[in-house]
Image 1 (cartoon, rainbow, N blue to C red):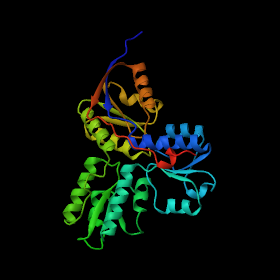
Image 2 (tube, rainbow, N blue to C red):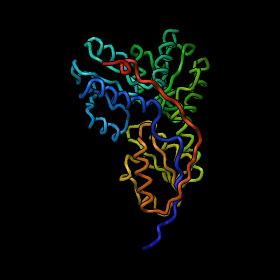
Image 3 (cartoon, one colour):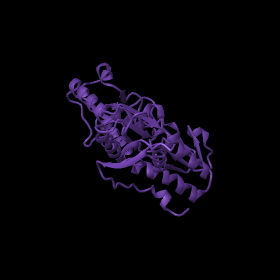
Image 4 (cartoon, rainbow, N blue to C red):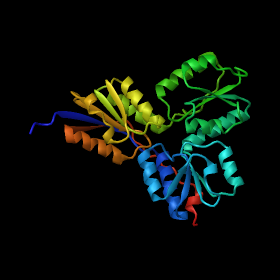
Length: 317
């Protein structure tokens, strides 16, 4: 038997589930306990196939729109947030509904409303079509929020009054890319008002910082996460920018491109905020099967954030 080649595995900390994702999954599980199956969930509760499949097996039914739900079963809105029209329609239909929007996303919704009430037009930095962006823009009347995705978009955006502007951001963006867009906004619109505290959430920030720390010493980066997960995709980009010659998103260990890792002696492993730890373990096992692995944890922050589930789930049925 030939000896396995040595590999240093830099394991990012923090990684994986954030408090908002943890809360959203608990909401579905508690709702199933309280009301029994089926419980309907509008949009994927979080962007991870493993998590969604697990909840589906327990009795959750995932749909894209409220119109796909019956009136007589509970419905849960995803962690990404929804436009105001969605709970309004659920209330009109007298449905039982639970909002699993991450409290840090709700904070951005409140911010946007406050600016709107102050007579400011809002520019949102985000990804077109992402559920969180759709939900945030849907807090206000059509046209009240303008979307920019890049520095180039800032040069083209048409505003009503350059002296009456505010900006908010999606919570799962690249910190560095967003900073460049904010700089461009401030240069073009010096009077623009920003959030009191950064909109990009603590979990996104912490996971990106850990990847940056690993990128300085790892040849390759594996990010466990889903292709439709914004924060996971940003981690791949951050890994590449931080110096990893190869940075790949993998949903499961079976997605690892072993040919791309030939000759590599150091790999960083992390997980997006909606990826469960069991999938990280799976990747570590797959690496250990092929390499003589030495694991080094790279910890850049400690997280102890917890969010309560909504009151409706804490009350008896």
